[in-house]
Length: 305
Image (cartoon, rainbow, N blue to C red; front, side, top):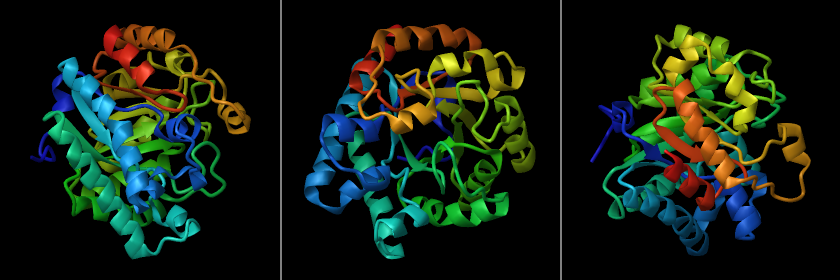
């Protein structure tokens, strides 16, 4: 089954996705993830089994509630810069990306309405990048990983934690060239602006303007709802944002970087905020969590919607 020709989450039905996979694996499961790279667990059976155990309850939750599920692959760090840092050759990294999508395929045995997304992360730091790529440079960089996804059962690509528009544009162009639907998920600071300083509305307009509005939709992730509630009034934001993967914590990105303990926030409060945001985001259909969230948070969100 392939949803490349039409993503079912565009039809109005609610879809769940998972929570903060890296923080769960580190703080709850005790794994050491070099460079925050969950894909590194795919190198052996023990790590692969841990990933399988992580995803299964989220899919079971979606199935039990009659909701769809977006299976976001654990490949946020599985691009060339990070792979090289972890000692992966190009062929080994491609194999890891293929294994990640194959693991997502397994989830369809639990629930048939599973859309498989190849997760793409930023080429640099997800909060404060030191090197900014041009759109052309970003396209060339991300085309390698996205090209691998195109050879698998991936239905789409999602660029998670994008911090500036030019890298998002490069991802979108690479996905379009590979024939894959693409979604862009931006992160914002506590003032509702991207780490680059650009407003969310401006970033969406720039990406749409330079890609012929190619993204299927946009998302927000890795920020607490109180950080972005005030910027959802813009008409373009209301029309184009269909997904949320918020942090449980109200801490800023800088504070999260320095935190030695996990801030899991309040699952019920986070769920209530999601429910209230459905008025501000009338097309909201994709709901999950980011840093600090786990099955408790996504279960509460499912109940609130």
